[in-house]
Length: 99
Image (tube, rainbow, N blue to C red; front, side, top):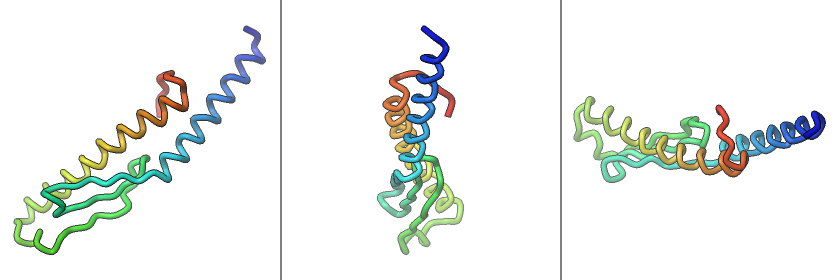
């Protein structure tokens, strides 16, 4: 394969990854904990957009509330990870790349 062909393929891959990253930035996921007492929204690039707490969460201790919020964030991150894997796999045709 010629160097120009390799460079063209590398550029196409770079463009595809850039489009995928833009898509992830616009994608949102929701993490939910404690039956909806806390709902977290984040992008596919892990940017937190919102944290919503139900009024009745105040019945919990501060430590419990912190744990509920962390659980919702973890749930959102897990969902974002799944989307990232799919979007980046599609963009790179299965080639493993650092993000």
